[in-house]
Image 1: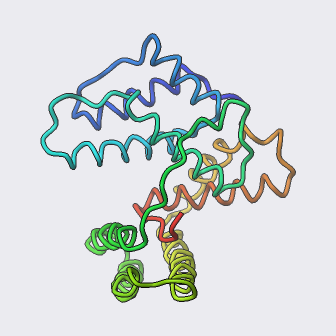
Image 2 (image 1 turned 120 degrees about the vertical axis):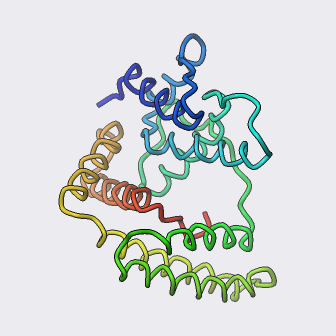
Length: 231
C-alpha cells in the first residue's frame, strides 16, 4: 500500500505549523515533489516528525528564532531518522532510498548526557509510580556509567553498550505497561500501516518482526522514552 502524497503533505504541514507556533507554510512546488519522494520511499509520518523535531532542537538551541522552520531544511534529519528506522525494524530499502546522509556516530558521553536529561524529565510525569521508579533507577545507573564512559575502551566500552541495551529493554517493557487496551490497539494498527508499503518484499517472519519493532518504537514515542543504545 502506497502512502497518499497529498494526505502525507497535509499531515506534515500541520505538524510543522505547530512547531512554528501557528505559522503555516504550505508545501507546494518543488517542496511538494521533495516531500512526495519521502512518501514514495515509505517514510512513516512518525519518523518524519522525529526528523523535524531533531532539526528544530538544533535550530532553537542557537538562540531566539528569527524565521519559521521550512520543511525542506529538515530533509537530512528526516532521511537519517528513516535510515535508522529501517535498520531497527528490518525493512528493505526502496529503490529511491539510499540518499540519506551517513551521520557521524555520537560520542558515548554526550549520548548518555542527552538520555539522562530526557529520562530525568520523565521522572516528573504523571505516569504510574512503578514507571517513575524504573526511570529513577535507570537514571542512577546511567549516572554511574556516564562517569566512566569517556575513558572506556575495548571490553569496558562494550560492557557499557551491552548494559544500555538491557536497560532499554527494561524501560520499554515498563512503558508498554502504561498503555491501556485502546492505546495499545491503536499503536498496533499504526505499526501495521508503517510496514505495509514494504510488506510485498518481506517474508512472513520478517514482516512480523518488522511490525513488532515498529510497535516498540511507537510505544517509545508515545511515552517520550529515549533510545538508550548508541546507534
